[in-house]
Image 1 (cartoon, rainbow, N blue to C red):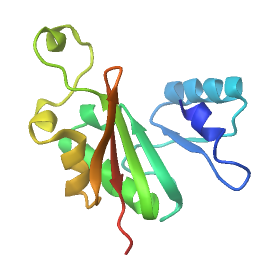
Image 2: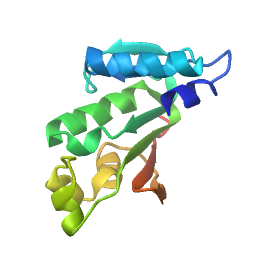
Image 3: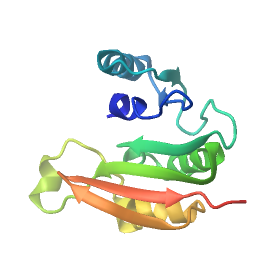
Length: 151
C-alpha cells in the first residue's frame, strides 16, 4: 500500500515511512523497490518521528495504534499532529473491531480499553484533530480520518 501511495506524490512530493525495527524497514524497502517507488525509510519509534514540524499533508497509520499502550498511543498521535501541516490529515487504517468467536480466533492484540473508549475516532479527537470521521469499512478494515486544525 505504501509503495502504491508513494507513486502518487509526484516530483514535488515526498513519501516517507517510519518503521520501528530493521525487519519492518526491510519489508518496506522491498515493497517500494518492487513498485519502483522512491520512499525515504527511517527507523524510529512512532512517538518520536524523525521529521520537521508541519512537514506533511498526510500521515497514514496502518495497524499501528490499536495495539499500543494508551500512553504510547497518545504520544504517537501527538507527534503525528506535530509533523502535519495545518489542514493536514491523519488517516488511520486498522482492523475492524471483532466480537464473538472472532475475538477468540484472532491473533491480533487490541487493547480492549481502546475499543471501549471509542477507538481511533476518540483517540484522534482527544489529541485535537477536528473534524474526525469514519471514511469507510471494507474487507475487515476501518478507515478513520482526522484533520489537524490550522493554528
